[in-house]
Image (cartoon, rainbow, N blue to C red; front, side):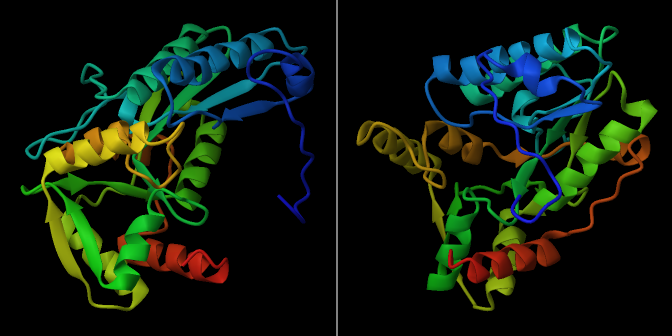
Length: 283
């Protein structure tokens, strides 16, 4: 935020000074959350922290518009034949997804008392993202590891496009009370995804396929060898996500109701991310 015309206010999602932090606000976009940790830690942050923030907003001295940045992980994956639809029953595959779904439920309980919207981004990438950085690092070395021996598909969304969708969610009356997916409509096979990363790096790469059981083993070992797992490493949750064959969803309602269109496709988005990684010395 350096150099931006913003005022930074720190607050603890466990309660504390949240009332003071939201006083006088017109809107709250809740993007804070935990992606790794124990089941208890994930629910404490993503469900209970969200509840605390909602309590503060509901008791504030002004009407606050509330947009919750959730994740497709709360809904679960699609299949190779059918992307996940908004009206499909949620089927999260990880504690992270279950904790984000619990956060969504806290938000939607307040519908009517607060003007709320839930947005579920698909896999997010772009500047400052540490989870996709290892793929760029592998491409730079000339080999990219691809999860699983069978075909897999995924949808992506650039971080700047997520920010634009969140702003659209704030501004569009049609979004009040709605839960919507956020992602580029293009569905990518992993071969296409890795080719786009290679193009962004400017190097030809080999693809090395790793069986799913090897991913689970790597994730379990990563969690056992230390007290935590760094961003970008494979833990059991990330291994489970990578083992799914289709992290895809129908974003048609989002494009219509938010009046939002993603700016970046995979090629331009990966190029933007690679340029940022290089400029910041990450790559």
